[in-house]
Length: 271
Length: 291
Image 1 (cartoon, rainbow over the protein chains, first blue to last red):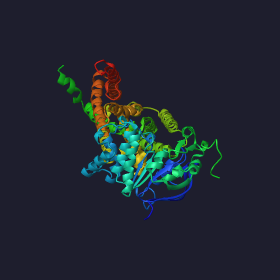
Image 2 (image 1 turned 60 degrees about the vertical axis):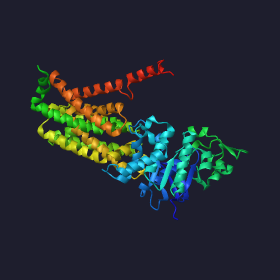
Image 3 (image 1 turned 30 degrees about the vertical axis):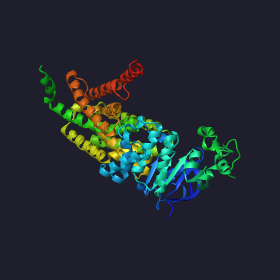
Image 4 (image 1 turned 45 degrees about the vertical axis):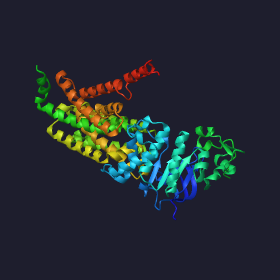
């Protein structure tokens, strides 16, 4: 089976700043892949490259058998919550319907099938009763549910989700992961960045460790590997023995630091 | 004077009829485009583009070309240039726009000051004089306005998606960059059309105020656009009556009526109404509500 996504020696960044260098990886169809790493590690950059929102400086990317962006209608991308203006005057139903727009084409209004798909998608994420509410009137978790409904309504082959479970309550996290797991089981490919290592280990099937480059890819149980974690997080991580290896991620540093400052207490683990 | 005559008499004059048709058309086009202007935070750009149209008007005047043509080239050109700067530039976006805006307007004023003799037409463009609009200009307003509305109608859901979530829209295959240039180009055309009515300086109010008022009242995009259009038309009508009976400038009257609507919505609107939220707070602490 051809890979859903493959990157071959890809280097990319924003202007003079390189965010990811020399990334080579493949993602098989039906994968449920967590992209993990500290802030500024290039997780979002990786997703944007695959979504065709950012062109690589060198290297080649193939998405669903074509260049990024070519099969855009089969790709659903969820931006980070901070990238969206929540005061915008759109309702839950309108946001979910946006998932159908690219299929519809210019000048065509949504029809019965589109409304059916949107209703089903909102039902799937547990937001069927909120169709007419303004998106900003919802809680953070409900907003993520609606955006996932938009993605589902697009009937994509590939989900690219930037921090889908960050800052949401535990119930929402479980519900969203149930939905994504079902999609992966039906052969769809799911790639999601996350800060939550526990979630990555328990609910995803594969994991990619990213910090300026791809450090490792493999089964998600690998997330508990202390050597890989310290390579990725530069030592800001402790794995406690017992309890099946509890993780403590010293994430406090990562929120206020530039990418270059992540490793300031530690030796560079890349060399 | 009987009430019917009060309302009908002003429109027995040809200039008032033409003025009414022009302001209704311009009001709707501005309100529709203004919805995007407000939601994308383009108010400052709208102001910049309208000021940048001025040198175009002056140059056309000096060269003896149709004024509209000069204004349109300058406005649409500036709007697209701003789009380019926003994608490529290193400076903060509003800084670039501020520099461009002041520079082009100064150039217009400089050229304006070199003209000897009658400049009444140009002054009309600076402050607006919709009651002086000719049949020929009215036809231009109608044709250009209809083109803008038709394009927005056909692309409105794509424009909505690209405005709300540009990344998600681009990833789903919508041509987001092209849509942004389209929007800026339409904004340029809208501004040139509207300058006739309210002048370079007040165009931004026609663009922003009705849409901002509607945003205080509604949460659905298409209804918001509709309400903004209705508000703009009502304001145009009332503004013209004010202008007629008080013998004051028509453009300024329309803008002030729109501003009054905005003030009312700000005070009483359900979404951010200052009074209604105060009342809501009071009722929340009222004993009858605390169970």
